[in-house]
Length: 182
Image (cartoon, rainbow, N blue to C red; front, top):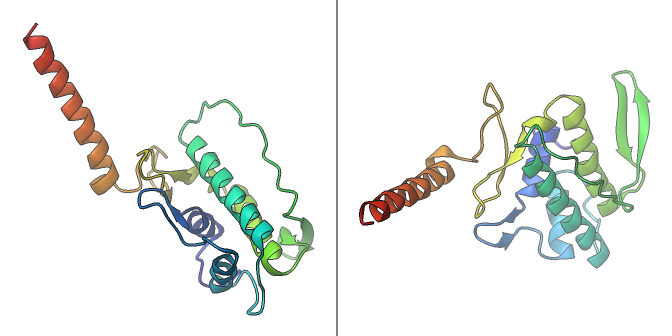
């Protein structure tokens, strides 16, 4: 993995955030954009290209990860059914530092497999439960929960947390005002 990403957890969040739910903008709207996105992060080589099947796999992986990160807010959640990714072939390599997952394929499929391997690395180093998406439904931005008790809900208290709390306050005020007029 390139030095552009600080950690496997950063890569997972960066990938999930390649689609901005709030603004409905996608950093990887085409096969060419996917190849460029992966290349910029050192996950593919300079001549690697993507096709529509690669793009469909990337979007499926990204949105499955978003759903999985949403699941990380509730420690007592029901288990999610597994989601299979046949196009992401990985193998275990035994190194001096221990076992690592590495892609079987090169090119764009290999780059996507590196993202899947980053998910497993985040899990292995204990960071997976800290990877979440903002609970603000209009946001869904992926972030690393660095709070001591792993209870952070929003990507930003200043923006999304404030929106949620203001909405709840207004709803309470409206209920209080409505009950006084009865």
